[in-house]
Length: 522
Image 1 (cartoon, one colour):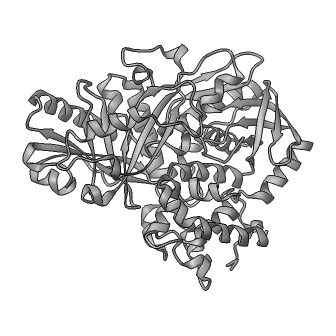
Image 2 (image 1 turned 180 degrees about the horizontal axis):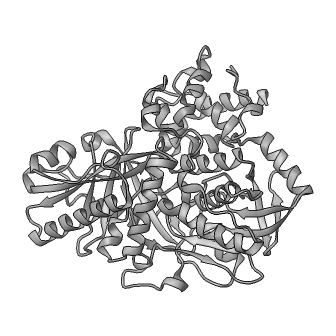
Image 3 (image 1 turned 90 degrees about the vertical axis):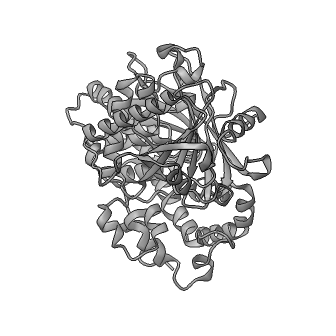
C-alpha cells in the first residue's frame, strides 16, 4: 500500500512527522524569517522567503487554509470588476498575477472558465454596450500581461440561442444575446494553499500547524502548541504577521473591516448542467454582480455578498438569512425556473481581510473598500501584510519579503514568478499522465502516485459513497502529505465534501476508517 511513497523521498510532504521535526528545530535554532498564518498569504511569504535562500518557520493556529483562504469564490481573475470602478492599478496587478499562476506556477490547479454576461431584453442597451467595452478592455489587459489566448481564449459575442446552450437555466427568449469572456478558476482554493506550503517545505521551510501565536515582536514569536499545551518560542531575524482578518490583533497601526462573502451551493443539475459561469447584475448597482460558478464536482456556487461583519468567527462565519434572500433574489431575476430554499444543499462564507484605515470606506460599505493589499513596516514591530485577495497572494508575499530582506540585509531577489508548485507541469505533460483527469486537476504530476496508492485495496480504491468519485486513497494521501489529522480536516478542506453537509455525513465512516489506517501506519 505504500507504493514507494515515504517521507524520506518526499521532502514536500507535511505531516505529523515533519511537524515534530520542525518543532524540534525551532526550539534549538534561530531562523531568518518567522511567518505567522497558514493561509494563502502566509504560505506565499514562506515560499518567497525560502526560495531566496532565507531560513523560514511558519506557524498556523489551526488547519491550513481554515480561514478566508479556503472559502473564497475559487476565482483567479484579472480584475474586471476593478476596471468598472476605474481601479486600474489593482486590475493590472491582478492580470499579471493571473498570468504567472496559469502559465508558470500552477497550471495543474488553475483552469480557464468561461463567463457569460447575458443581455436581457428589458435592460437598457447602453448597459450591454458598457459590458462589451469592459470585456474588450479586459482582454487588452490579458494580452498586455503576456497571457496567451491559447491559455485564456478571447471574448466573443453570443446570440440568445448560444447563451441558452451555455447556460440552460436562463430564459433564452428573454435575451437579446450576451458576451462570453474567460477568466481563471481554481477548483479548490485550499489546494492552492497546500501547494504553496508544500513547495516551501520542499525547499526547507519548517511548517507547523496547531501552533497558536500569542505574542509577536520584530524578532520573536511566543506561541502555544495546542495539541500538548506546551509553550513554543520562535527566534527570528524578522517576523511577518500574515494572519488575515486577525492581523490587527497583533498591531495597533490599523483596523480591519472584515467583509463577509457568502455563497450558496446547489446541484448543477438544478441549473441544467451549465457549461459556463454567468453573471447577474445586482439591480441598481452597475459593476456589481452575483455569479453562478459551475464546479467539476456537479455543484454550482452562487455568490457573493459583500457585507461588513466585524464580529464574525473568522473560520466559521454565520450566514444570516438576509444573505440567502439577497442571493436568491438577484439570481431569480434571470432564471427561467426560480430557485427555492429547498434547492440549496449547502453554503459557505469567508471574511475578506479588508483594511479600513488606509483605504477608507465608500457609499456601498465594504464593497467600496479597495482590494489593494497593505504592507506595514513599523520600526520595532513585525512586518504586517494583509488585505488583497487570492489572485494576488504572490505579489503580496513579494512586497512583504522585500521589506524583510531590507531589514536583515539580504540582496536576493524574488524568484516566485517562475517557480512551479509541487505537482505543476506544462499542460501537455499533464495531459499525458496515466491517471484520471479528475486526479490530474487535483494533484498534477502526483496524480499517478495517488492513483497507484489505491490499487488492490477496496478501502482506498472505491468511492467514499455512491455519488462521489473521491476515494480513500485521496484521504490517505491527505494525511501522509498534506497535513490532515482529523476527519474534519479531510471533509472540510482536503475533499470539500462538507460544503454539502449531507455528502460529508455519508463519507464520515469511511473517512474514519482511512484515518485509522493512516495513524496505524504512522
